[in-house]
Image 1: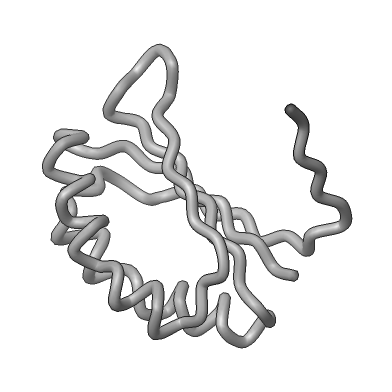
Image 2 (image 1 turned 135 degrees about the vertical axis):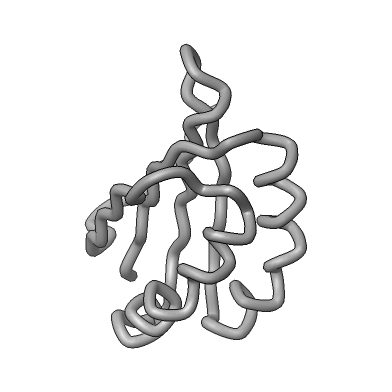
Length: 93
């Protein structure tokens, strides 16, 4: 299963989070099966978003569709994006 991890700076986390939530239809449209949002422990305006997809084509289509939503959300600069293939997932506790 493909996973995309995006790290980017935002102008204001609360503004970004509202825009992220409003873009849920975009995530549904591209078949995201799992999503999580994280903040940098030292800088609350640095955000990490993790998204899993059912197939590589869905992940690629999402990455092509998401830039306008990022701009609206107040992303600053060029995001760092990693695309990986899940090898193992564990849940503890």
